[in-house]
Image (cartoon, rainbow, N blue to C red; front, top):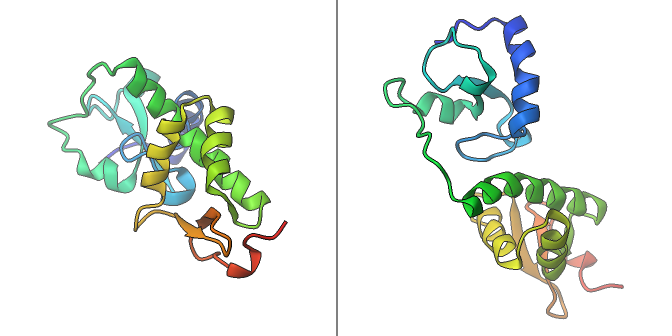
Length: 165
């Protein structure tokens, strides 16, 4: 159990979040999805509060990691590094677009505009969307009356809004 008090946590959280983004480094879920992100010590030493020794994890990921076998520090390929960096950006962009457009946007826009805005390939966006529209994920894809497919925030689906100019 960490001996980090609230003052120390507040002091360290912001620089770690600015460096890495506010999402779990384990499961990549955003802070809004998990509630609280905990500060994890990579070397298992709760007294070593150097920034390079810290990362943010959700409660589940933080307590799933045995102290004896810390997260691997292996080198990632440039493509994997870009994927880790860009996926949360795409998720934030998509959520923002859904908020602006009454909780749905055409699937083609979610793919093509998202790829352009975030600076990733269309195929990468399709991989992100497969995860984001999984059974337990926050979004779904539904077809409108005239065949146009839309990405919806689950629970906000409405056939009244589909395929109107």
